[in-house]
Amino acid sequence: MVLSACGGGGGTQQPADSSSGGAAQPAFNAGLNEVYNPSTKKGGTLKAAHSADWDSLDPGDTYYGYSFNFGRLYWRTLTMYKPGPGPEGNTVIPDLAEGLGEPSDGGKTWTYKLKSGLKFEDGTEITAKDVAYAVGRSWDKKTFPHGPSYLNELLDWPKDFKGVYEDPDADYSSAVEATDDSTVVFHLKEPFASMDYVVQMPMTAPVPKDKDTGAKYKEKVVSSGPYKFETNEIGKGFTLVRNDQWDPATDPNRPALPDRIEVQVNVNADDLDNQLIAGDIQLDIVGTGLQAAALGKVLPDPALKARTDNPTIPRLWYVSVIPDTPPLDNVECRKAVMWAADRVANQTAYGGELAGGEIATNVLPPPIVGQEKFDLYATPGNKGDVNKAKQALAACGQPNGFSTTMTYRSDRPREKALAEAMEQALAKVGIKLTLKGFPGSSYFSDYAGNVNYVKKNGIGLAAHGWGSDWPDGYGFMQAIVDSRTIRDAGNYNLSVKNDEVDKLIDQASAELDDAARAKLWVDVDKKVMEDASILPVVWAKSLLMRGKGLTNVAYNEGQSMFDYILLGVE
Image (cartoon, rainbow, N blue to C red; front, side):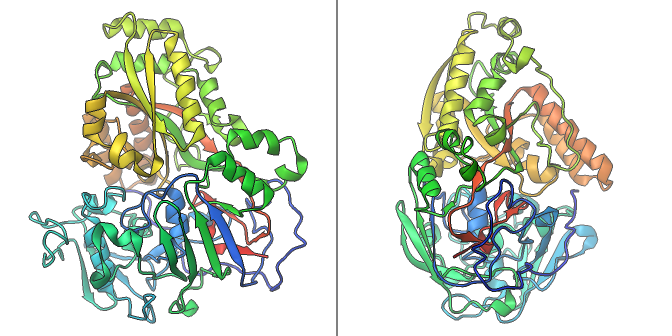
């Protein structure tokens, strides 16, 4: 088992004054441990932009951290991370539910009671059936390839369950049920301590069955939060306006300050940074920090640097080394990649230590409970070891090297720079890379995370990253190293297919002692590194810029970025 929720109730602490706080003086890291420019002022338009397209606005089909964060403006879930700065941001508190979950049957059954007075944007009551239906529809990974699979793996689904679309009358109450209008009950296959963390994910955002349009629901999501969609042009952008059916009495955690939120998508990442610096937009939705070009402007300029925060986040940027693709099906060929990589060049590709992060030597990042640092592939100056790489190539029968393809997200300049750094470093030992970039919105569903595409196109390496779903070993590692999560498409584990890793995951998940459990996750980490199927790049830091005129800016540890539900405008 993993750590259970440690939180209680309570909402965001609001400042006593109701002014815009316009006298706030910018300072580096001013939003890390307290709210910068606090305000209760309502009104105005928040302008935001995204450097790619959304994977999906449907709460059942999204798995980017920015989407989990931003989506809380138009959806609500059973629980949520406590808003605001500091360590309490990793705490889960009730949202739709009156309280945290009540476990029974040794942790195999979890019960949540909904608050009264909850409504969708059309005025209809939100009931437990809407939550149970949302969970049921999220089971369908053919229709919804992007969403997390935790509930699919944890819940006791009927063996003949085919999904709510193929069989609209299916009974899946053995997994999740509404025992009355206000009670949602989850039935798990095995005891599991972290349900309060799992149900803060958007799979529990209620969906009215009679308004569900399956794969097209992302075009018109029915709001349960303080904002609803006024317009939505897929691939271009959307606008949120106030949802007059949202009752703040049921929701002390969302101040809902702006009247309007305008979002552009598919904005060039460097152009986005320039607009943020100039004040043309106020929020970079992706939330992973400034690009390299902007760093050259911001870091030397004290006034611009004073508008930034530099948190260490529970995220790893890395390269999957895919064992399905020969000759990387030989562990020694994978080790050759490990030895040949220039870690300093890879770190530089992400913006260096300040904006990119600390050179990573293993999978678990420092903010994760129980993390230990170790290095199985240490090289002089972290710049690679040609001799050891060539020894590994000889051991795998490829003494002259080999050719393979490396993918990256074309709308992420840092990943392109990483791929180019890898191309240069691996060429020194005879490993020739062909680089291919793909859109981030379909990267995991159609390309790097699509098993058939990877096999047909000989993908050997894939750049991407991962942030914790909650801050312990299970919440960070399970989704990216457990081979049993791999499906036809929409994968986030692209490369770890090791029975010994799976066995250690099962041991860690069942371990009740906190210290012993944390140590088992370190053992998982070591086994993955021995398998050489993940090349760590950096344990992430990001340089986040506060937009001009933003109020209530605070870095939230649970979201690993600014807390979007708090934001207002002067």
